[in-house]
Length: 150
Image (cartoon, rainbow, N blue to C red):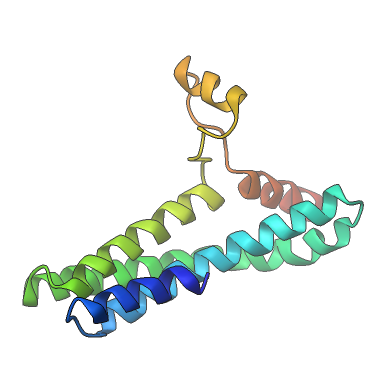
């Protein structure tokens, strides 16, 4: 969650680029979504270890983070587009676009549909048979939490 944005900044600086608002926003969006994923998967692991209270603690917070994390992704993407329009494909703009893309993919992967299907044979076969993507694990857990709350 820190290493990937830091690596992007290091690459930008080594290529002669500069740190600008679009790069900072895209790095923050990427880091936030990686933190969200880490918190969820840590909670899921603890649930498997018969400590469901950890995930139950985080689910309402992860649910509340959905709209702000999407908003940050969209603001970062807008900043990257504006920066590209103003100065072209500079190193920082390339890094911003890549970080925004990763953040948006992580958002979809956690809050909407499971994008990764190549690490599980059953998921891969399901996808190849045309049965589409599964709902994201975190999305299912948040929906179940909301259902219990209602």
